[in-house]
Amino acid sequence: MPAMLQKIDYSILQAADLFDGMSVPDLEKIVQAAQTRMLVAGDFLFHQGDPARALYVLTSGRVKLMQYTPEGQQVIIRYIGPGETLAVLAVLREGDYPIAAQVVQDCVALAWNRAVMKQLMDAIPRLERNALSIMADRVREFQDRVRELSTERVERRIARALLRLTRQAGREVSEGVLIDMPLSRQDLAEMSGTTLFTASRTLKEWEAQGVVKCGRARVTVISADKLAVIAEDS
Image 1 (spheres, rainbow, N blue to C red):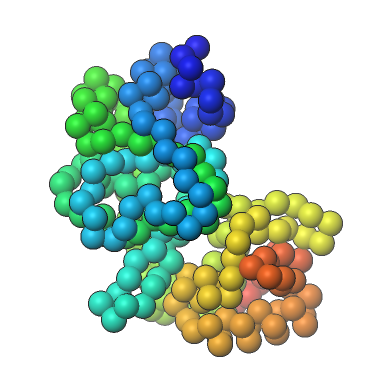
Image 2: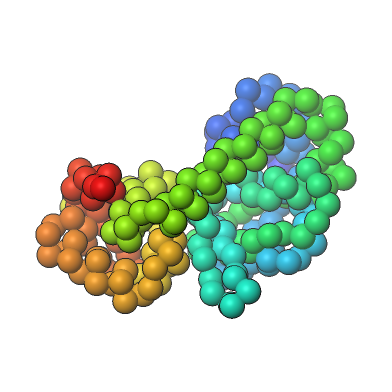
Protein backbone atom coordinates (compact mmCIF):
# COMPACT_ATOMS: atom_id res chain seq x y z
CA MET A 1 0.00 0.00 0.00
CA PRO A 2 1.38 3.47 -0.87
CA ALA A 3 2.95 5.41 1.99
CA MET A 4 0.34 8.16 1.62
CA LEU A 5 -2.44 5.71 2.46
CA GLN A 6 -0.66 4.43 5.54
CA LYS A 7 -0.74 7.86 7.18
CA ILE A 8 -4.50 8.34 7.05
CA ASP A 9 -7.56 6.33 8.04
CA TYR A 10 -8.33 4.42 4.86
CA SER A 11 -11.80 3.46 6.11
CA ILE A 12 -12.71 7.16 6.26
CA LEU A 13 -11.70 7.60 2.63
CA GLN A 14 -13.71 4.59 1.53
CA ALA A 15 -16.77 6.09 3.23
CA ALA A 16 -16.16 9.61 1.90
CA ASP A 17 -18.97 11.04 -0.20
CA LEU A 18 -16.61 11.97 -3.04
CA PHE A 19 -15.33 8.39 -3.30
CA ASP A 20 -18.67 6.58 -3.07
CA GLY A 21 -18.62 3.36 -5.10
CA MET A 22 -14.94 3.77 -6.00
CA SER A 23 -12.73 0.75 -6.57
CA VAL A 24 -9.64 0.44 -4.39
CA PRO A 25 -7.22 0.90 -7.33
CA ASP A 26 -9.04 4.08 -8.42
CA LEU A 27 -9.13 5.38 -4.86
CA GLU A 28 -5.40 4.76 -4.46
CA LYS A 29 -4.74 6.62 -7.71
CA ILE A 30 -6.79 9.59 -6.54
CA VAL A 31 -5.18 9.77 -3.10
CA GLN A 32 -1.65 9.47 -4.50
CA ALA A 33 -2.36 12.60 -6.56
CA ALA A 34 -3.33 14.60 -3.46
CA GLN A 35 -1.37 16.97 -1.30
CA THR A 36 -1.75 16.64 2.48
CA ARG A 37 -2.43 19.70 4.60
CA MET A 38 -2.18 19.60 8.40
CA LEU A 39 -3.79 22.53 10.20
CA VAL A 40 -4.51 23.58 13.77
CA ALA A 41 -7.61 25.21 15.26
CA GLY A 42 -7.93 28.77 14.07
CA ASP A 43 -6.18 28.20 10.73
CA PHE A 44 -8.04 28.80 7.47
CA LEU A 45 -8.11 26.40 4.54
CA PHE A 46 -9.23 29.38 2.47
CA HIS A 47 -10.84 32.78 2.89
CA GLN A 48 -13.98 34.13 1.28
CA GLY A 49 -12.98 35.84 -1.95
CA ASP A 50 -9.73 33.92 -2.43
CA PRO A 51 -9.25 32.42 -5.91
CA ALA A 52 -10.80 28.95 -5.82
CA ARG A 53 -7.92 26.65 -6.72
CA ALA A 54 -8.41 23.40 -4.80
CA LEU A 55 -10.90 20.82 -3.61
CA TYR A 56 -10.48 19.23 -0.17
CA VAL A 57 -11.52 16.06 1.63
CA LEU A 58 -11.18 16.12 5.40
CA THR A 59 -9.67 12.99 6.95
CA SER A 60 -9.66 14.17 10.58
CA GLY A 61 -10.74 17.15 12.65
CA ARG A 62 -13.51 19.63 11.90
CA VAL A 63 -13.92 22.78 9.84
CA LYS A 64 -16.64 25.42 9.84
CA LEU A 65 -17.82 27.05 6.65
CA MET A 66 -18.90 30.66 7.04
CA GLN A 67 -19.81 33.67 4.97
CA TYR A 68 -19.60 37.39 5.64
CA THR A 69 -22.42 39.69 4.60
CA PRO A 70 -21.68 43.10 2.98
CA GLU A 71 -22.34 44.60 6.43
CA GLY A 72 -19.60 42.42 7.94
CA GLN A 73 -21.89 40.00 9.78
CA GLN A 74 -20.61 36.43 9.97
CA VAL A 75 -23.00 33.56 9.18
CA ILE A 76 -22.03 29.93 9.80
CA ILE A 77 -23.20 27.82 6.87
CA ARG A 78 -22.32 24.35 8.17
CA TYR A 79 -19.61 22.23 9.78
CA ILE A 80 -17.50 19.71 7.87
CA GLY A 81 -16.17 16.52 9.47
CA PRO A 82 -14.02 13.54 8.45
CA GLY A 83 -14.93 12.09 5.06
CA GLU A 84 -16.69 15.23 3.85
CA THR A 85 -15.75 17.34 0.86
CA LEU A 86 -15.10 21.07 0.69
CA ALA A 87 -15.06 23.42 -2.31
CA VAL A 88 -16.40 21.12 -5.02
CA LEU A 89 -17.25 24.24 -6.99
CA ALA A 90 -13.53 25.05 -7.19
CA VAL A 91 -12.96 22.30 -9.75
CA LEU A 92 -16.23 22.64 -11.64
CA ARG A 93 -15.72 26.28 -12.63
CA GLU A 94 -13.20 29.06 -12.21
CA GLY A 95 -13.93 31.79 -9.71
CA ASP A 96 -13.48 32.76 -6.07
CA TYR A 97 -14.42 30.87 -2.93
CA PRO A 98 -17.86 32.23 -1.91
CA ILE A 99 -17.26 31.21 1.72
CA ALA A 100 -14.42 30.85 4.23
CA ALA A 101 -13.30 27.57 5.81
CA GLN A 102 -11.82 27.79 9.31
CA VAL A 103 -10.46 24.90 11.36
CA VAL A 104 -12.23 24.40 14.69
CA GLN A 105 -10.45 21.15 15.62
CA ASP A 106 -6.93 20.28 14.44
CA CYS A 107 -7.33 18.56 11.11
CA VAL A 108 -5.73 16.79 8.19
CA ALA A 109 -7.10 17.44 4.71
CA LEU A 110 -6.28 16.02 1.31
CA ALA A 111 -6.16 18.66 -1.42
CA TRP A 112 -6.27 18.49 -5.22
CA ASN A 113 -5.79 21.54 -7.41
CA ARG A 114 -8.19 22.12 -10.28
CA ALA A 115 -5.93 20.79 -13.04
CA VAL A 116 -5.13 17.57 -11.20
CA MET A 117 -8.73 16.91 -10.20
CA LYS A 118 -10.01 17.52 -13.73
CA GLN A 119 -7.51 14.98 -15.05
CA LEU A 120 -8.70 12.48 -12.45
CA MET A 121 -12.34 13.13 -13.32
CA ASP A 122 -11.61 12.55 -17.00
CA ALA A 123 -9.93 9.25 -16.15
CA ILE A 124 -12.49 8.17 -13.52
CA PRO A 125 -16.01 9.33 -14.54
CA ARG A 126 -17.48 8.11 -11.25
CA LEU A 127 -15.48 10.83 -9.48
CA GLU A 128 -17.16 13.61 -11.47
CA ARG A 129 -20.61 12.09 -10.93
CA ASN A 130 -19.99 12.00 -7.18
CA ALA A 131 -18.83 15.63 -7.21
CA LEU A 132 -21.98 16.72 -9.02
CA SER A 133 -24.10 14.75 -6.55
CA ILE A 134 -22.40 16.53 -3.65
CA MET A 135 -23.11 19.87 -5.31
CA ALA A 136 -26.80 18.97 -5.71
CA ASP A 137 -27.04 17.93 -2.05
CA ARG A 138 -25.43 21.20 -0.91
CA VAL A 139 -27.85 23.24 -3.04
CA ARG A 140 -30.82 21.44 -1.49
CA GLU A 141 -29.36 21.95 1.97
CA PHE A 142 -28.85 25.65 1.27
CA GLN A 143 -32.44 25.97 0.06
CA ASP A 144 -33.68 24.32 3.27
CA ARG A 145 -31.60 26.72 5.36
CA VAL A 146 -32.94 29.75 3.48
CA ARG A 147 -36.48 28.51 4.04
CA GLU A 148 -35.81 28.01 7.76
CA LEU A 149 -34.36 31.47 8.18
CA SER A 150 -37.20 33.06 6.22
CA THR A 151 -40.21 31.29 7.70
CA GLU A 152 -39.50 29.56 11.01
CA ARG A 153 -39.47 30.82 14.58
CA VAL A 154 -36.08 31.28 16.17
CA GLU A 155 -36.61 28.45 18.71
CA ARG A 156 -37.20 26.00 15.87
CA ARG A 157 -34.11 27.22 14.04
CA ILE A 158 -31.91 26.77 17.10
CA ALA A 159 -33.37 23.32 17.81
CA ARG A 160 -32.81 22.24 14.21
CA ALA A 161 -29.23 23.51 14.31
CA LEU A 162 -28.52 21.50 17.47
CA LEU A 163 -30.08 18.37 16.01
CA ARG A 164 -27.96 18.71 12.87
CA LEU A 165 -24.85 19.04 15.02
CA THR A 166 -25.72 15.94 17.08
CA ARG A 167 -25.90 13.98 13.83
CA GLN A 168 -22.65 15.43 12.54
CA ALA A 169 -20.56 15.50 15.71
CA GLY A 170 -22.56 13.80 18.45
CA ARG A 171 -20.94 11.48 20.98
CA GLU A 172 -22.94 9.55 23.54
CA VAL A 173 -22.10 10.36 27.15
CA SER A 174 -23.79 9.53 30.44
CA GLU A 175 -25.99 12.64 30.33
CA GLY A 176 -27.04 12.40 26.70
CA VAL A 177 -25.33 13.33 23.43
CA LEU A 178 -22.36 15.68 23.59
CA ILE A 179 -21.73 17.83 20.51
CA ASP A 180 -18.07 16.91 20.41
CA MET A 181 -16.51 20.11 19.15
CA PRO A 182 -16.15 23.68 20.39
CA LEU A 183 -19.56 25.37 20.12
CA SER A 184 -20.14 28.79 21.61
CA ARG A 185 -23.46 30.56 21.97
CA GLN A 186 -22.24 32.99 19.32
CA ASP A 187 -21.62 30.07 16.94
CA LEU A 188 -25.13 28.80 17.54
CA ALA A 189 -26.57 32.28 16.98
CA GLU A 190 -24.71 32.58 13.68
CA MET A 191 -25.97 29.16 12.56
CA SER A 192 -29.54 30.05 13.45
CA GLY A 193 -29.71 33.58 12.10
CA THR A 194 -30.36 35.19 15.45
CA THR A 195 -28.62 37.29 18.10
CA LEU A 196 -26.29 36.17 20.86
CA PHE A 197 -28.81 37.40 23.42
CA THR A 198 -31.63 35.30 21.95
CA ALA A 199 -29.49 32.18 21.60
CA SER A 200 -28.25 32.52 25.20
CA ARG A 201 -31.74 33.11 26.57
CA THR A 202 -33.14 30.12 24.67
CA LEU A 203 -30.40 27.77 25.87
CA LYS A 204 -30.92 28.95 29.45
CA GLU A 205 -34.64 28.17 29.21
CA TRP A 206 -33.93 24.74 27.74
CA GLU A 207 -31.41 24.01 30.49
CA ALA A 208 -34.11 24.72 33.08
CA GLN A 209 -36.43 22.32 31.21
CA GLY A 210 -33.82 19.54 31.09
CA VAL A 211 -33.45 19.64 27.31
CA VAL A 212 -29.77 20.62 27.11
CA LYS A 213 -26.77 21.22 29.34
CA CYS A 214 -24.29 23.94 28.44
CA GLY A 215 -20.68 24.35 29.49
CA ARG A 216 -17.81 26.43 28.24
CA ALA A 217 -18.07 26.15 24.43
CA ARG A 218 -19.81 22.79 24.91
CA VAL A 219 -23.42 21.69 24.53
CA THR A 220 -24.88 18.34 25.58
CA VAL A 221 -28.33 17.39 24.34
CA ILE A 222 -30.00 15.67 27.30
CA SER A 223 -33.33 14.99 25.60
CA ALA A 224 -33.20 14.67 21.83
CA ASP A 225 -36.91 13.81 21.85
CA LYS A 226 -37.85 17.11 23.51
CA LEU A 227 -35.56 18.98 21.15
CA ALA A 228 -37.17 17.27 18.16
CA VAL A 229 -40.61 18.33 19.38
CA ILE A 230 -39.41 21.95 19.56
CA ALA A 231 -37.87 21.65 16.09
CA GLU A 232 -41.16 20.47 14.59
CA ASP A 233 -43.48 22.70 16.62
CA SER A 234 -45.36 25.07 14.35
